[in-house]
Image (cartoon, rainbow, N blue to C red; front, side, top):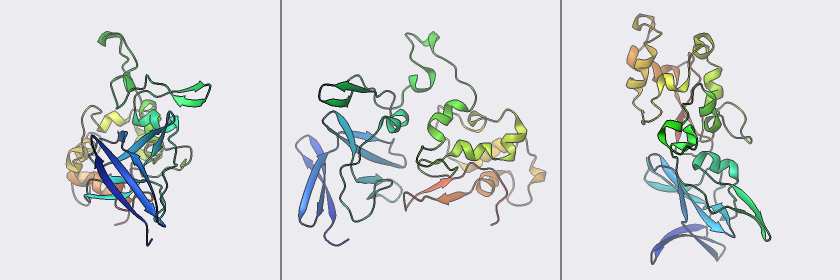
Length: 241
């Protein structure tokens, strides 16, 4: 929209995002970063003990600034609050506390995704839990309450898609850890496709061979929230090409 633009500025030791619309501007600091930076990053700022999202995020693949997920183009909006449900997945520990002036996040929050996110808090390594099954991953990969449908997207229900697959239903033991090393990033389709060979022989493939399983049976789909991003569906099926 004409007359609407954003500036990313450095002021002293801090960084700020400024939005300008109809001659009026608003600037807020980059207080917290969400995202590893592999695909992208979005940014939060503190106000009165609560967190709000900055309207512009950075997309790594296209090397440019884009609308934050779910933000309408052409509108300067710095008032989108971040509820605890978001931080349940994007941080290791945030909790709201009630004060005389209203609710605010407690100061004992823990940033990033640490071991305790999956293994629980423990005084020493021996006390850490060893999670099993798919329910743990579902805590962050089964979509949001606002997006309950099984879709592959920024907040899509990938666990729901996997559970709808015949591979999952017939296996009886298939979990996220069957294909993914949960402690290491694995994005090579050929490496992931090799996991399919544990149950499926190469002779059953009529198309690209054992290195193309993921590309054919778990295709990339366009995001509805981020116009320049795709996500791989975890519904394993036969798709028309």
